[in-house]
Length: 101
Image (cartoon, rainbow, N blue to C red; front, side):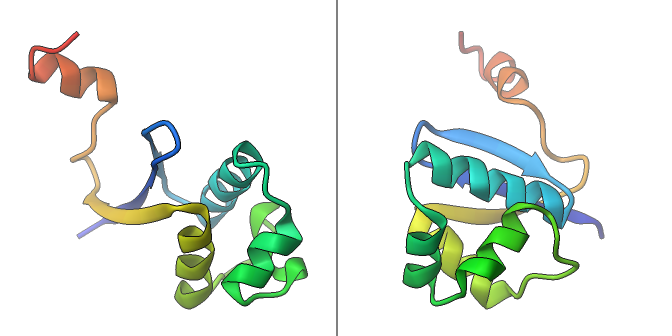
């Protein structure tokens, strides 16, 4: 069974689907900047080094541990949901299905 990560950002209720660690790092960087947080502050609160967060956000890591990831996401007010491949649709598709605007 294939799965991919969905990050839900509660800043303005965006849902972003990604399939790679690099895309995940980019989403974290974007959210951190949107929140106007510095890398060093997020890293300190998550209990990781600023260098580790920098490399993750830039897509310069081949792996990033789940504990590190969950700690960073918690600092940013984000969470991960796993969705079966092919089961996700766009927000517009969901609205059309439910008869919304």
